[in-house]
Image (cartoon, chains in turn red, purple):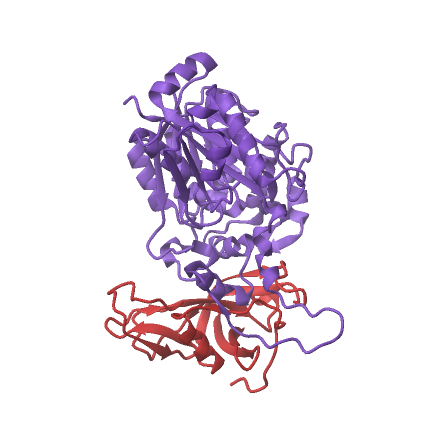
Length: 147
Length: 415
């Protein structure tokens, strides 16, 4: 568990833009819970959240908590600064999230970052674990480290 | 079918580097391109009765129509979503309008002076909270409100730094490299081929700048594996294309002494669950992730056109990024999935002896980045024999719009 409130990105990174449907996911993040929206009728998981289930068109959902594990699906070391105060390059990563132990019938992927790793360590398929970056009392963001 | 849609004229403004056109508005450039295209077609401006555009073009048709003195406006159409996925779809919309009798002459246009507004990749800077002057406690990070589905989708990835096209399309290409062994050198060969074509093109922004593979390999990294020369330029300029019926095209063709250029077929769309593709969607299906996402659409297009990739004499492939060109060539069946690198190595894309001369005016990488409308101009020109890198006896041209986002494509044929 990350208890040290580590920081990797400056506060001047773009803030999450949320709407009525995605807010619950971001609220769970603020509580350091990694979740996926799961349709209670057919168990299809969606990320980001949406108003209806794309498979059965139901609108009854649960924000299912995930174990925070995943694998690196793809990545890019990005040299374009999004914020003036950023360290470059930063690692953009698509993480395939582990849904084992949940009723989700499909895994989902999340756009995020790899932190505390050198570019030379980046390899598709490597296992990762979520770490939380507390941006403020309102916003926390999931990042991932190699295990 | 005497209403079958044809391209009869094209025109563009001067192309410059981003932000260089400041003494003339983007709006005026759109008019300039339209007037030039009408002249090229040999039509009177007030024969135009329809207008179509894409990419949320700022220059609304209804105002341009009034300013052009068009007699009666019969048809206006916009293709959704920013960026370059919709250029061919705009041509398709114009073609549908003339073929169904909604309009007789439709101009498709796009004008881009992002320096006068805001660069696509700089959108995030408006959200940056930079502390100025005195050291003050900056305000805490809070949520922003997403006022559209697009903003909610982008709002899910921007906090992680996913904003630019280079980053978006680097992600799938990295998997392509991992799965098939494709290399940065393959990308460099695409870049230098198109640059060579641009060096023969007096309109090209990069006309006077040569590019070697070594220069490509040493250029700075933008979003790994995409280097500077893997990325399209950002430019100011405008383009326009005149679409009309076969009957009208026949008259004009006699007058212009050009072959007729038929819009044989068009297709647009996206695979299941695609959303805005690589820009916002980490959940693109695994079996199409390391592709341009345009294979299904390409198959529909070939079927509608009753043609195969081997029938294509020249291709204008949307080149926002070299890697996307490579994946889209596979999507369209010019080579097998995963063999794009070998295809490039064969020299296929060169206008001077290649089996598939490609981006013969230099493309977005070296001519100009007009969200792909200039590819359509070059497509018509390559069939009229007016390209700066002519392909002998070219009869069939494929033009594509951006891979990696909902896309579109057309097949043109000279007759």
